[in-house]
Image (cartoon, rainbow, N blue to C red; front, side, top):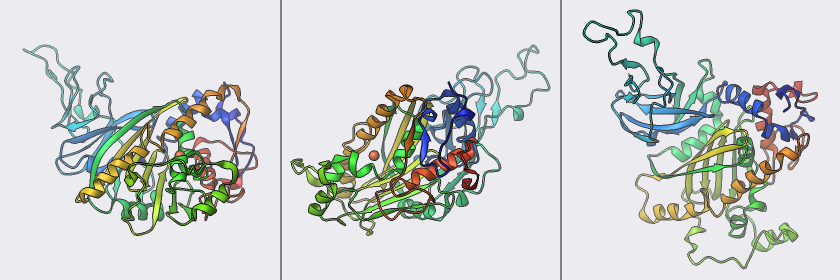
Length: 422
Ligand SMILES: [Fe+2]
């Protein structure tokens, strides 16, 4: 296996990515430390998932399980799901409500902020045994993360010196959150799936709108997202996050078919008995049937037709990740809209009419990686050189923005790339 520092990045503008970074265990180990525990804000959960004191969810930051909960004073806390005593998994359910967190092994008990508040038999019994007098519970709390929230979204960081969340998100992403989460949210359910691929393939996929109108025949055929529609992307100042949008009905079906040429992605023979799944209700009055936000390094917010969801990428190894979906609507949605959101969920999740294909592509890449130790991917759609906001859905430019920031954190230097550092 190549040492991570021996991997060659042949283009300064990140228009080539060495395939070896997708299956190298040493690269994966460095990512867990320098990316997920680096100077970033990881997406943790929605505040709507923990509305009351004592509510908790277990999420992941990189490959580390992290508990997020709400304390009695309403504050939100995050800590590693690992007892400070023997390293036992502390919280064993995915979500719930508790007064405190007590380990089943020796019943060490932590308050909702992660402080150790109880150690059975700390003073022994009947004048015998007990912890030494020097033992101080204050020294044995859980490993906590910095927590910040914006617009009902909870973020966590391992770095105490991380930049303020508002600056990390930057204005386009804050605007997206204001728009999409600016009213009380109702969590409708969850999807969870294992994908036998590398987590970075999936992050690329989320930033690559070029694939969306080609791989996903369902949404191209029914006009939810096509490469021929009007659309574009916005990025933050460091080009690590991205928003993509397309305008529903902004192309003509016949012209679109001509544009696709022989690709045969639009298939007129496909029909639906219940068309509510493809009927886009313009609830935000902006005509956008796709409005998606990718947040470095692990978050994704989705508006696909009338489905709303947040996704969390949970790397497990270089060859596998879990994808966790929190599907939501708004409190007070009228029953018809709520029903449409649920119905349109057939497009997403592990077996979704659209999303199933993304998981399959991850497996198709991972399957043959071992046979391609020195090959590179090609990222040129939309142009090479400067990483700028594209004005078309036919683009891979934001993918290069992801790699630029990734390399910056990982200490990878492309050939002649010093001027490209963020
Ligand atoms: Fe996709």
